[in-house]
Length: 200
Length: 101
Picture: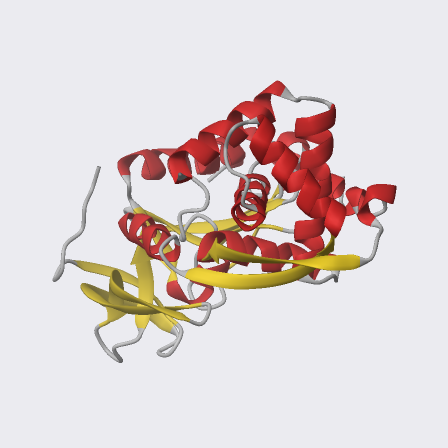
């Protein structure tokens, strides 16, 4: 595996100079979706100093940083949603804290949206919002902290589906109820327990 | 360069870590931000046949940009890359239009 280091040379297309330029790698902050990620190795244009490239070795650091950044999401849900969360958490001896369970379940399903089955999961989430279970007066309040990676996935789906982020989370809770409590889907249940074990 | 050769070369670059990502689109590039692994990108590339492939010229360079829009398992992914020796340069790896089958 090739690992680049500060001072190494390459070449690439500079948007500023609008041509192929020589570049030099150095560590610098990277602006990323409103975040500033420090010390990311990038290839900078030797002529204007613009960042031209990110070598692939930096992708691991970008992901690691994003997983340390949390975003808060507040949502109001019908009380039976809280019951679903606590039932899932209690039956699998994970937790009885609805906020934590909400975060866990949302992270589990959102982590799959980048996988090949991601499109199907999104369909399931949107369909779940039509479910009778999705109805009811929102009396309870949930407050979840999501990693930047999860939060970005959530926002991207909400944007594409033209709904609020909180609506997607509600859909996920209904899907989880069907998968874990009703169908007792072995794969997703196992993943849920492993996911929880890694976060407790 | 034929499509088979393009795929083979891209996979070889990934295996050897001769990979760079254009900074300008990096926040939308799931491969650049670590959301998608090397193995997954290789699988996406290898899953594509000729009817999932097109190419166009880079807007700044005189190089072919290879565009893959896989069908089947990876339907919805959109992969865009080109080569500047010795690297493969990814402009984008993202998911688009989830409802299209």
